[in-house]
Amino acid sequence: MDTPTLEKKKTMEKRESLWGALGLAWELGYLIAVPIVIFGLIGRSIDRRFATSPWFLLAGIFVALVVTAFAVYRKTLGILKDEKPL
Image (cartoon, rainbow, N blue to C red):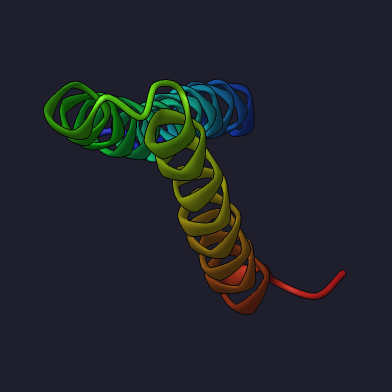
């Protein structure tokens, strides 16, 4: 078997970094969307039950934003730990 040439190696690294970036974007999308949907639906159902619209919905969205911010912060710390120094 041939050892990959330098050009092939660079192409493979670019492809891997592209898939890594797409995977990160996909994961961050879910990190943001899922808590908003879940806490928003919980808040909406509580509002319907107690006729307090829109207060629990807004509280659910606020909690979702806090949870999302914490999750993104932790994800960022993990990425920075794995980052190779220049």
